[in-house]
Amino acid sequence: MDALCRAEPRPRRPAAASPLPWARFSAWLDCVCVVTFDLELGQAMELVYPYDFRLTEKEKTSICYLSFPDSYSGGLGDTQFSFRLRQSGGQRTTHYEDDGEYNREAPLTLQRESAHYFGYVYFRQVKDNSMKRGYFQKSLVLVSRLPYVNLFQSLLQLIAPEYFDKLEPCLEAVCNEIDQWPPPVPGQTLNLPVMGVVIQVRIPSRVDKPGSSPVKQFNQENLLPAPLVLPSIHELDLFRCFQPVLIHIQMLWELMLLGEPIVVMAPSPTVSSEMVLALTSCLAPLRYCCDYRPYFTIHDSEFKEYTTRTQAPPNIVVGVTNPFFIKTLQHWPHVLRVGELKTSGDLPKQVKVKKLAKLKTLDTKPGIYTSYKTFLHKDKTLIKRLLKGIQRKRPSEVQSALLRRHLLELTQSFIIPLEHYIASLMPLQRAITPWKNPPQIRPFCQDDFMKTLEHAGPQLTCVLKGDWLGLYRRFFKSPNFDGWYRQRHREMTQKLEALHLEAICEANIVAWMKDKSEVEIVDLVLKLREKLVRARCQHLPVKEETLQRVSLYIETIIGSLPEDLQAVLHHH
Image (cartoon, rainbow, N blue to C red; front, side):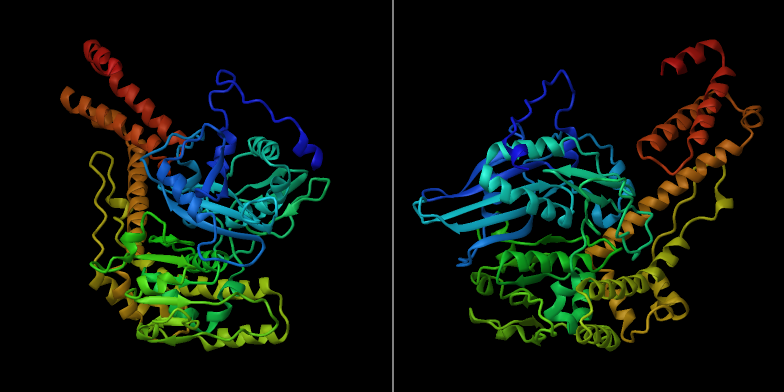
């Protein structure tokens, strides 16, 4: 490992040799940043790698502030946490060329972000008398558009301690190694070598069965040394994250489902970012469509936007550590105050639900400060099972799996009636004829949907009692419903297009042409070409042989026309 870090960094590849240098690196990371503490400047960007990666000044400033704990922490040593940052300065060219294939195949909850960066931070603070301030304070930050919190934090555990010892040459060597990695392809198990270790991961796919546990041990392929196998690239230890709020898991799930504004006040960026990421993950496989900031500081460019009292708080979950926020975010409807997360043998003290009016002093006790009343009753059997697990010293990952399964079943019970109803809005296949535009998807009518719940509601799959109708009515007003509906409508429209193309392929085109004028035939050629382009651009769920048959049809039709028209259409 030492030898690797002392090795001469690989020279930058000339542009001519490869049209896209750093293409493999940028399939995983946008850049790596080093942020240090400067007595005169405060937090300052020491290094961005690759050197030609362009961050705007606004992004650099935000990354600098988000890479250090916000409130003074006397604790020495190493800390890891995450943040999420709004991209500024419009669309950025990237070394990585992706036509959207990754996002089409990955689960909705693991999509590559288009307008935000994730920052994965390894912060070190140790006494150092050679520094003017008496402390060495530095952060290594991995900036990516992928929400792979486990993978990137594990990667930081390997490279950050080495980097703090050996500095820049070590970082260049690591980046060059990442630039040899295969790209993240959903459904594949990958071996990722770095610093003498092989990290083995499986990239989840959209076709995975929800709730299926990742395989613990993959094909070892006689790898030596044995690989570091990550059971999941993104799943947190939910049981540890939710320990102080287990009895309120129902309430938190509802607040997330409805896209309510929530502040998480925590003693450290680690607790804050883990709690926010745990909350956003508890709706899986439903995508959380609102904004979220695992760690947020008073220096953030959106600070004014979130703290203004002239408008309602935005639909966002924001994690903070600075006590100053207790005063500035008092008007938010839901505030979750948590202490340090402990992994002791007993169930930690469960926080209480308190009135918002009590959120006044800086030493506010842990609790959920809200006036929200849940629509569904608590699941007491879940709490009992988790308590039994604690008494029996059941491993945390088993408790987490129990909790995740409970949340998954709850979300599925809620979503399945919506899925059944929206599927009923699809036109019947026999209504799709080759020579007419495909019929429209019928509009979503909330009242009609509500009528279906009596016979096909969540009560069929979920034992929880409560006001399910009221919960659906509130859900219809949330960004999560809007996001779900748009996604499903887009998929159904593409399915209709695909079925229409298949109907055209099965039709007798020569018989259709017999009594048609040249104008009608030319019009058909143009429409079929347009359909072909759309099918390829939007990657419609159509077999390649179907597309080839449509191309053949176009040639057949053109061939039946006079030569002058043929020349025009071929040129066109």
